[in-house]
Image (spheres, rainbow over the protein chains, first blue to last red):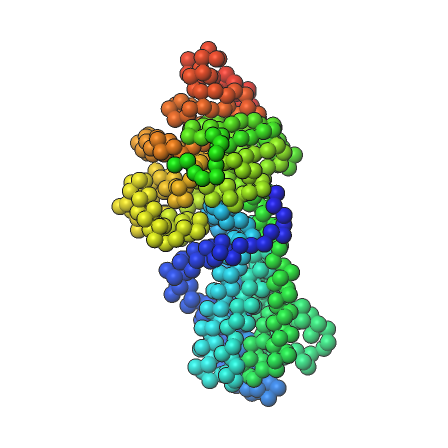
Length: 259
Length: 252
């Protein structure tokens, strides 16, 4: 059996990525809209509704405070959906992964290709939303244009966590736990809707351990005029977690599909 | 048709092949040689170890004990290189349901790193070969069972494989579809492609296979050409040989 640490082949991974791009190019209209309206509704409800009562947070108008965070959450939702149901479907229902693994593509290439794709899809959603909030005039700094590579990084991080979970669960029902106990709480408590700097220290510590918190900070920094050190620090946090978790889906899928 | 870098005339060589899943013995020390250009059959009741053997050959099950050489290479060490030269027709239909017939073949060519011009050429050829040219823009779910099986076979040929592994290729097909498939397999063998197949249909094994093994409870209980086996066990036909050798199944 080949070692758990075999490095992926990038050309092989990109073949998987290209397959997904081909499928997406047929369905993007229907696929883009729901996930795009979702953050938009939150922006309207919170930013324009609640924002009427909460005028400013740390000197920033409330709408402008939450808008960049919603780019981050768009990324989180897109990558998570892709690597939860879509990946499980390909793994257990259509057995597409089996057919791919019977070609010269190995598990580590398949995982890399799937993660790169989920990251790509996340960037598409996050960037689309960034364009929308820019059009609403909710982005203050031109540095926001530098956001997409960071959205990709965040997308890769959520994709890796998602695929790690998917590769370990026996049934699709377990996604309920993933979304209700992990993704939704992050969305609510990840620092999109309120800042953490005035909350008790323990709350800040808990938030520090969640990936969305860091991606929200990166997006907000870039949208409001960045502190380079804060951007780099939070981005590094995401990169380290992604790298640490990468081998989990590789090992689990190898055990599951080619044992 | 004989490829570079492969001098031997044995396409698959297994020695002492064994595997357990969760304490259950799936394969219990199996030896066999598949000669290049032959059609080689694996017969046996459900759970005899046929699919496990097939999956080991195409890299979707790890070899636990023993050695398995496919196209002159150790599959455990050189899986990627071996898979590049194999075609696989799995038991379950795992076609890409989000793509059309033509795209299934094009994307498969992509997985093998075949350039787009060459891929287009091969795909056009395979659509003709598998009698699917008229359905090339149909989605997989719109195809009949026989068409899907033909598409699975066409997909397995995109990389011009030297060895094609077929796990129960005709199960669930009507007699017409089965005949069409047999003709397809005949044509492949005429081109010098080695075929390895499992089947539950004795008349299919007798019709297609040059040699076959009968597996039972993870062991080979008989090996030979269909005629040899019939003569050796003094039975009227292959089905009688099969029941004679694996008859304990009836008691279960």
